[in-house]
Amino acid sequence: MTALTDAPSKPKLYYGWRVLSVTMVIAFFSCVMAQLFAGAMLPHVEADTGWSRSSITLSVTLGSMVAGFASPLFGRLADRRGPRLLTTAGLMLTTVSLLAMGLSASISIGVYYLAYVSGRAISQNTLSGVVARTTAVNWFRRMRGRALGLTGMAVPFGAAVMIPLAQLLISAGVSWQETYYLYAILMLALVPLALLVLRHKPEDIGLLPDGATVAAAAEERRARPDEYNFTLKEAMRTRALWLLIAAMSIGVCAQGAIGFHMFAYYKDQGISGGVAALTLSVYALCGATANGLWGYIVERVSERLIGAATVSAAGLLCIFLLLVDTPMEALIFAIAFGFMARGEGSIIVAMEANYFGRGSFGVISGFASPFQQVALGVGPIIAALSYDATDQSYTAAFVAFAVMFIASAGLIWSAKKPPLPAGAMIEPSSQA
Image 1 (cartoon, rainbow, N blue to C red):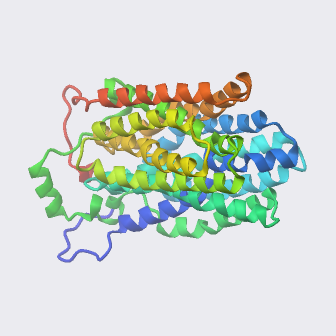
Image 2: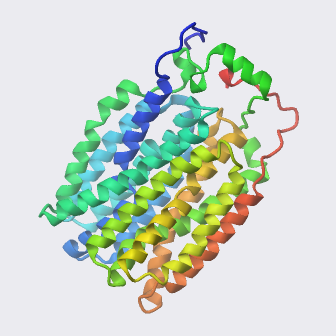
């Protein structure tokens, strides 16, 4: 490890911002494997192949589940190896998956399943999930909330751009298969960027989190106690971890289902495909903004308060969604729901980092991820089955999701910062 120095002049730009910027760019383009993007492509794949809506949706469910089950492994690797090789390999393998998805239409739905499920598992973890979050936590402490918020912005912001672009390409005569081929080329082009910029921790290149000098870090430790780095076993013994896992899982199940079915629901309500795509883009854009906004605010206001308030509002908006049948109402819902529901992830991740420290954040985050990813995958299929079982109506599903959001808000409010384990010794962040 490079020795820490207290240079008389600070660098013009802390290297962590470069690492975070590249992490965000890669996560931005990884949205093409995300659930929201798959939902927007669903009508095109269904119309072209004749595959049923439920069978295509099932691939999304399986992809989310496999991604979750793989997260503990990737979390441990992120703690030990850092993002450079993991992200580079993830970009290459995701490229292969996108190409295979395009080819699947002329082969079989089995190829589509294999390509999407494997690609989702890889991209979710190495490009936008546990590896990206661990990178943000390692490089930032005092500004950790905004760093995690910015990281969380990338995928929904990418969806806000890439979904309308895909719709535009398809409207212009480009097939959905060729659209995936184009996106595969974009992913491959990001490989050199990952190799050149990404690094594991600031200490590896003689820096401290946030770009602080040794003297400044020492002054901060005198002003307030440093964070304690829980091990996974220690975190598992706390009530807070299980409350946060339950809150995130319940919330993401409802949020993911509504986001996935929003395009189809709007079309069922008589709203044109173009307007439906626009509102989906606005929803993703507002969700991206929410991640950055709430990430910045939780550095100054209680995470529990912000989390409980926004998630409760998301529950009330689910009832409003039942009344939406005009473009203006659809747009209002997309904006409000994007701000209220999509920021929950960044808020809870910030709570995990602040509660349990950065030393084993990848392992702890990876442990929590399977619960969340299974819930994310189950949400769309629950809504689809409810839709089929209730004479093609989303009413029962949306009411259930409203109740789930309220329950999630209560769990967030109950998740107080855990006490330190018996005999715990707080170590300086520069040695974490």
